[in-house]
Image 1 (cartoon, rainbow, N blue to C red):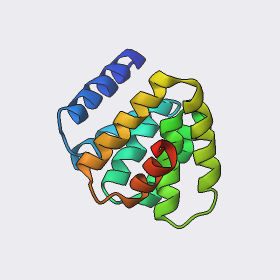
Image 2 (image 1 turned 30 degrees about the vertical axis):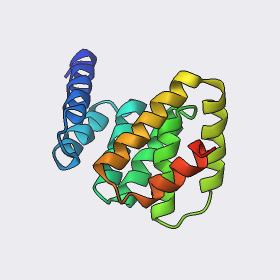
Image 3 (image 1 turned 135 degrees about the vertical axis):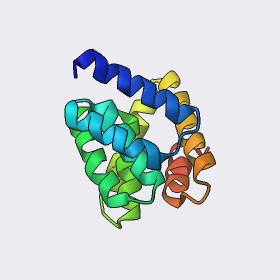
Image 4 (image 1 turned 45 degrees about the horizontal axis):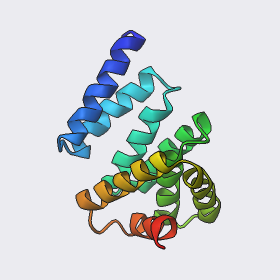
Length: 141
């Protein structure tokens, strides 16, 4: 599979997610993308998010770690990692949140995008307590 076709698969899978396709269907697709393009931080970030939606925080943490390693400045990857850390009772959540805050303080468009992602996540999984906490830390005035 060429890089172009991997990118196309990623984009079409992202569109399927936005259209309402559930994580149980998309996790195998994103795992495949990550296997074929292991340096694609966006794919790892999406995989972590899907695992979190499926109540699989240990797998989410592993995927989020890879995403953060590949793209340390990506606030969504760090939010996924913080959520997985909260759900698996790990320490170091505050450091992740502080790094996200720093990025969001300097980029209003990215801040809006992250806020929309959080709202969308909570609409799909209203009882997502770790994401509710993160939402409070990042966006409560």
